[in-house]
Picture 1 (spheres, helix red, strand yellow):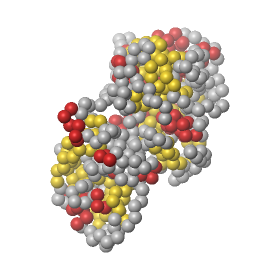
Picture 2 (picture 1 turned 90 degrees about the vertical axis):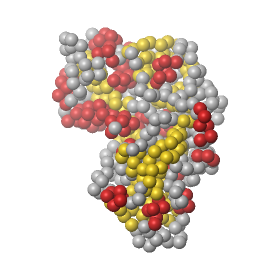
Picture 3 (picture 1 turned 135 degrees about the vertical axis):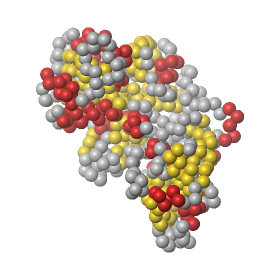
Picture 4 (picture 1 turned 30 degrees about the horizontal axis):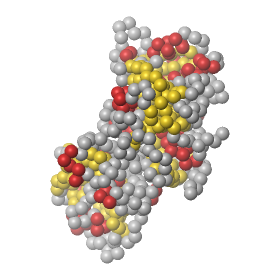
Length: 92
Length: 206
Length: 245
């Protein structure tokens, strides 16, 4: 059964569409620094959990949350917890 | 929003509701399998180190080890569950300990009004205390006659069947009683604070 | 150049079976933009009651082919979108897509090489876009592909890969992990460090590696490439798996 869970883990590339929608630009090559352990990874290389009410991108070293994204029918919300990542543009 | 473009022939993997329509909340569809949703890696907790704790606004916090927890009076529960990602599963069969039994072991401070359930891996969710008592919620460690599998929240998860299933925290390790409502992992990013499927309380403002 | 990512309506213009459980759809796009090899498109299918499902598919074709893209779809057992794309869709059908998306798992001349590509199953798809682009532009970047499939019948793009391998500077190695045909000369085991070292050797150590496949294979291959001497910043990975809710 753990194999099943492994299959559910993707990487930050899987969130590229949602992030491009928020930032208006590709974000997968942007470097993100984990606020907990300092690991630096391109956003496209982060560990992604997409089978959830939102998308959660986590540090490859310690699994701390780096970015969370929730898409509702009306808007897309993003919470950036990692360092170095540009602040998301404020949506109207 | 632009008009939806309907794809010819696409229905999705959904079960027909049949005669069960009255049991399916609005906007939900029936599933027969048990989808696995997770916001993080599946923790593998050593049962020898597992504890369940009630803390916060109680006179004395209480903590049970795995074996002690198994000795608490358990019950079987058959419940319908609804996930905010729009699936509903009927007649799920659980075994666990009612939150009422757990709260009998502590003396609540009279200011206690809200609960944060906390889990291995850092997940949290918030529920008003009155919605966890009187048989409305339990901590489950069995599912369908077997130990609860890790991908479904084992060794133990909170189950609050009358709310969307993100409130039923997987890998739960305790309840924190508080005098104020603190938004949890999804509630702090656009998901509804309450989450009643029958009122379709999916997102903030619904 | 910034470009807002908009949904557009693709029309299926050709369908090509690849293996028993894989087929390629050619999609004509009204608002086509050249992609970078390795990028993907999001596909959104909507039922008449508004229920929608969204998935990402890598572009299989090279950007030199204008106005259309190929996506190659493998059946996910009990999946929701792949069975529809494999069993229901016919030429002329239309659905929503948006892209191209992603800038991390891409290769073109600006990245350089030599390139070492490692694929597991349908993880070969974005790597195929890189190889087709390499062939179409006649760049001489040395390239190797190590492709792991369960059986010979499950190899996607086999004839085309063999044809490309007859040209300069590119070689393909297969490993069949479950069953090998009689007289099979390729590898017959799961990817390991020794296999990676053999395939990497003719390219030198200054290679750029792209690994795409199921998570377990990606981790084994990416860790193995580091163990055989590649630096982590020259290894790019993409995990394939059922996505969406």
